[in-house]
Image (cartoon, rainbow, N blue to C red; front, side, top):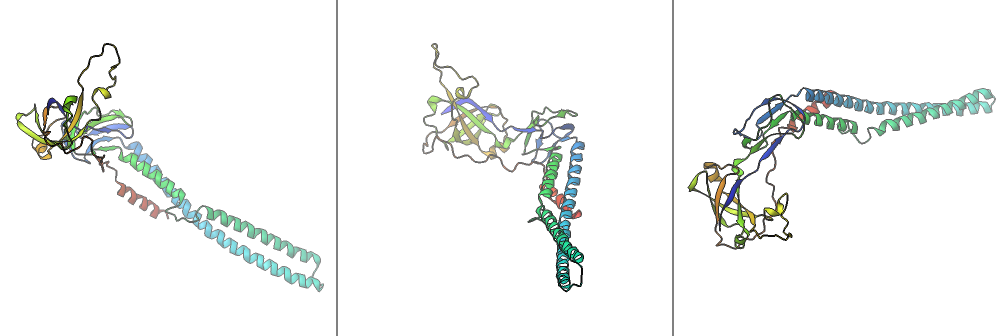
Length: 338
């Protein structure tokens, strides 16, 4: 089956601002080739730097406060031991004075005073134990590093560090820069499109076959493609990787109303995706949107018409965020304030 209603398609990876800022540098322009992780745009990082410094100070404060809480546990523990000793001494003193009072050696007032001392020591012990329990509540089952207050401060520092990293926009993949709209000095907001990166080594062909041509088309069938850009002498080789889920009209913004009285039957077309040989693409690159002619060899009908299960098209995209560096800085802050 053959069609000239076919075009080169590819991913247009949008580069957007993840946090607001003013553009201070543009490192790549339309038509230029970039590698994953390569700087594209710099935003003014002054405000983000202040946020990082504030989060660092808050983390240091949380570590010191938590360390102080652990010290309070030791202090209240010592207070409990001291109060227990005071109560034991007061009880022993009361027992001796009761014996002396039975022999008439001391007055009733002195005995009453000894009993009051026991009550005071008992109340002091109860207060010390209450303070000990209260001090333990904030640190029980934790260390300085995994205390909830410190973990919250660590999360705030990570958030500030991530915001700071967003001031340097990098290319997520290898490709060619296109659709640059950002300008030097422009104030951008979060989510604003800045430019795009098109990976030309991942382009494919969307061939729109008539519905009357689909019966013999199968996934895996060999295909040949010629591009108007290079002429008929240069032939690309590929294979069918999938048939569209519907015709172009079915997914149109305003689908046709076929129930009207003046209906005219129009042959529909369904996009068929053809993957191209990567080696041939490297030698003779194609651009997204180019017109091509596609021929599919339908002799082998052993394949299916239903696509394969979904697999990740992209993963592990470069973001420019140094998690290892942030972790090292967090450990340094905690160690310096223990």
